[in-house]
Image (tube, rainbow, N blue to C red; front, side, top):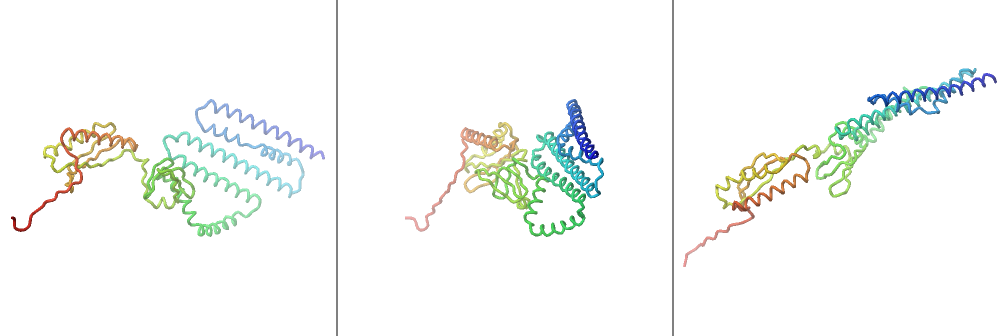
Length: 341
């Protein structure tokens, strides 16, 4: 009876001491992190927040059990429970540290890397999956389970599952490929075949795209990787090609002057870089002039505003120079056949 009483007192004292030590260390770490500019010491303080009271209680009970003369089987159970508690608490510490590391990385790189949200969400899931899988295997090994045979059995079963779910696994690995290779990220405007829209979500199996007309388009990740994707968000500048047709009756001197007129109009627009303007072809009812210039921003509305200003300036300039725009016309030649009266 005396041993049990001493053991209970030891458990109580151990619990009190552990709580005091944890609180003291936590305060010292928080005080130290407040005085430094680095972020990793904040991670230590954040990790300590994951310390659970039940873990401290089980540790105190384990120390108290050392004062008792327990049967071998009972002592083995106590040790197993203590090890399992340590493994579970270690997993909580690791998970909290992983979360802090990811959040810290996101805060540093969010503006410079817009793909970060997609990448981090997947890597966080994979990291936690690996962490808890390792903890589970260690726990099973501590409980006497043959982990080697279990892993071998899971390997054989995994092959069978993989063969039965090739499509799902294909989309899963395609999702990881999208996350790591980053052909597009959230917010990118993409065109896949005849479908186009803004990427809203990259999931483990599908990618959701919001089309211009408002409906949501859902693509299987495997189909996306097998398609040619046009990513307009990555566009740094927009190349514009447009044609102007003038009437065949336009004098030679004015035809020769048209490229310079177009160049002056394009260069007068802010945010453009002129490339070329040429008399390019003889059409069925017009003389074609082809112009190429660059808009120094990918914004579609800005491009349309510039093109509209160029068109209006061309109409005004051609009217002032007496140059007529061509429109579909046909000439009909009549010839009399036979004797004339």
